[in-house]
Amino acid sequence: MEHTSINLNLKIWRQKNANDKGHFENYPISGISTEMSFLEMIDVLNEKLIAEKKDPVAFDHDCREGICGMCSMYINGRAHGPWQGTTTCQLHMRAFKDGETITIEPWRAGAFPVIKDLVVDRSAFDRIQQAGGFVSVNTGNPQDANCLPINKDDADRSFEAASCIGCGACVAACKNASAMLFVSAKVSQFALLPQGLPERTTRVLNMVAQMDKEGFGSCTNTGACEAECPKEISLTNIARLNREYLGASFFAE
Image 1: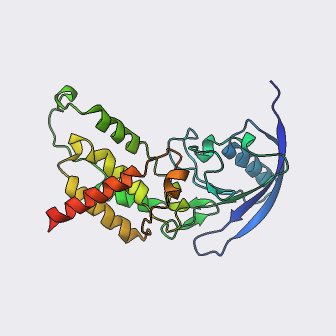
Image 2: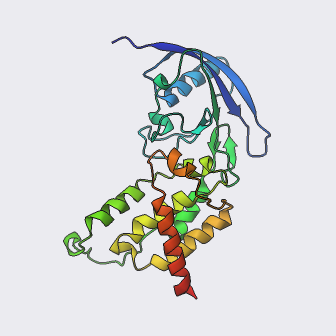
Image 3: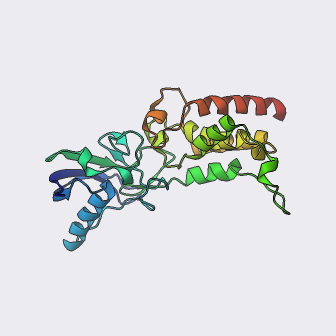
């Protein structure tokens, strides 16, 4: 089967570090197969830049299978690009037209400082998870799984919340740079399971406190986070987080 090739103009944000002002640069590129992934297309550009003795475009990536959350970039004004429920690495070039200009930027959030070009520091998410996104397990023999019956609806909702890959698209899409969808997913995946109950109150209080400490904005329920999330994490998790936080606050007093 013959693949279609397209020519593009890439308008890419270049920034040396967090202190650099940064600017856009234009890169014409030709002969791009429509079957390529978006990151493969950037690989082709970087090979061209390296051959020309120029600095390649820095971008974050790892699995290239849509599960690691590393490929965080704004494409034509949308987190991860034009396809719904799709990470950048799973976005293919058939989503674009021949001769199109594609604008590529890093996440824009104070809590996600730019490291270089399209790479941002998302370690704020790591610190939020370290604050409470875990289950403490005593040493000894593990309990048999069949001894912990879990309602299927709860198990399904927990699994759906746990599918969050921590890419930060919710923060980048939110006008307030809120991390509520991310934090609510991490709280929900444990709040719905018996294994997460012993630390239920401390977990939500500690994670929300760390979220605020990192400088993320407040949630105003515009729904942009859910709309741009590549794993389509539901806003109902934010409602659950608010209930968990209110209940935990009573216990803490």
